[in-house]
Image 1 (cartoon, rainbow, N blue to C red):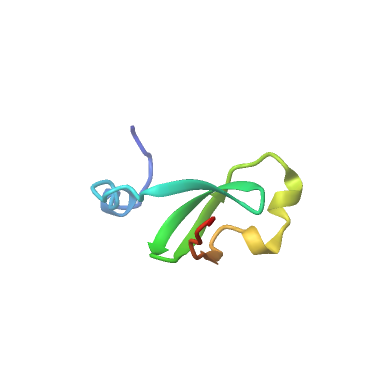
Image 2 (image 1 turned 120 degrees about the horizontal axis):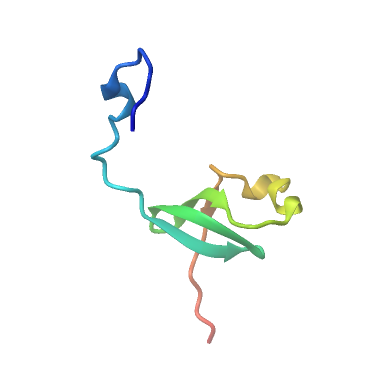
Length: 75
């Protein structure tokens, strides 16, 4: 690809060799989303995977928000 710019190409392509971020798709509060695992009990919302516009207006599920969870047994 040719870019006609005065910006140094090292600034544009600096993350080209970086390993891609591993994401997980899940449904939380009925909303499908893509998250990035931060630690054992926390994930960060990367993007919302829905076409329902009301989900995008919910402040508790915006990209960048952290979700803390605990796994419980169904017994």
